[in-house]
Amino acid sequence: AQYFELDRSLDLLRSAFLVDNRESPVLRFEMAWIFTGEGAEDMTDPPEIGTESTPVIVERETPESPWRVSAPVDALANQEAVDAIVREVQFTVGRSFRDDVENYSDYGLDPARLRMTITNAADATPQTVFLGNTDATDEKGGVFARREA
Figure 1 (cartoon, rainbow, N blue to C red):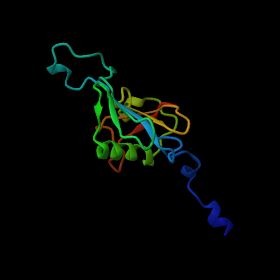
Figure 2: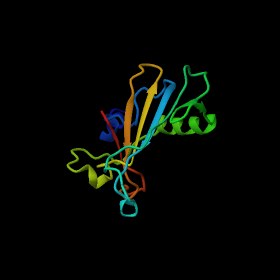
Figure 3: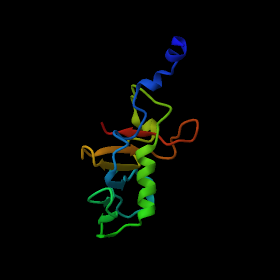
Figure 4: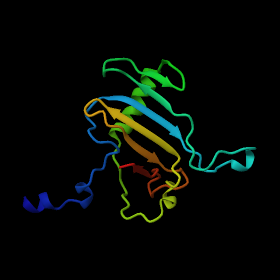
């Protein structure tokens, strides 16, 4: 019984989740694309590499309130679509961890392709996750992610 309890992967000792406090309802979700230079040759005045697009922000006052888009416009959000993406980010579990990364560009994370910031009701501390380019995937086809913290 002791051997069974101790015979675990060392990956179980780390936090494998994109966000902390996953059980707390999310009150704010922000997403912005990041310009990586892709397609710059077709643009007359491309933005600087690493520049973020206008962020899309959806938020609600309480977990029972409906989602509203607050930027770039103010409007009622598609509740099902926002719930789906927030749930996906909130409950995603990481795999294929890389420690002591010397060059984040090897993983499509310098610059990253997408920034997501999520704020939950428990501590109201924004947590930011960066997603890499789909050109850099792990052996199972997943996209690399990096928590800002």
